[in-house]
Length: 288
Image (cartoon, rainbow, N blue to C red):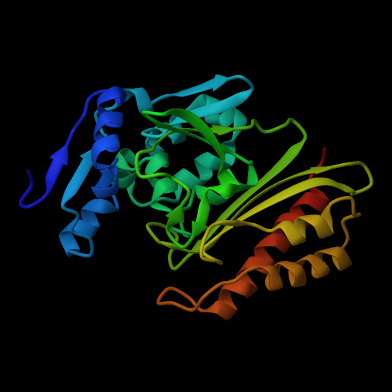
């Protein structure tokens, strides 16, 4: 017990599933705690019961299995930053992890927490969206796979059932001829919640033709999103200044930002279209 809060601290997945089966609809899950502890200290959130999963070593580790990069849900940002497998197969995930908080937050915060927290400003989430990641979710009923881009149903809402736990994320590897881009725009250069965050990857044929492109965006809608209309506009087209201007207008209309204490709706649209243009101009000039 912590004050009036009852804390469950299982040491195995089997024990965790049992608690979730019995108390899942009453519990707040605690992973690294970098968000939850702030909520508790400020009394924004006062759950009666907490499931502390920090001791579940089964949810840690980074490997390459069945053609995908598998990252355990309790893998910290520091571990992501230092992982050779991540550098090889999804290097912009390292870029995203480096933008999150201070060293203390990176040492404690987890990729699973970033995903399940379901904030549209989650810095790793546009990377997972652009890479068409899959989420491995478990319960006493078994394990199921959920496409990352189908995980969020609304602001801070997911398809996760009350008795389910995120186990890992699986990311298809970067292809040798893919060009990657990540950029986080915040109030300052470090330790800032994003105003706009973009992750993109693209393959280019000879003659500046865009063979494929995926664009993930954060902080510009109630959830992290893929810019599907903009992707469709660009795919199969020859890169040119005129096409870039058309893409800027398309993505500006595709997003649904709000005005809040960090930024305005107008600025977020302006910033998003110009970050996309930056990537497309880089794509025009990069060799290979």
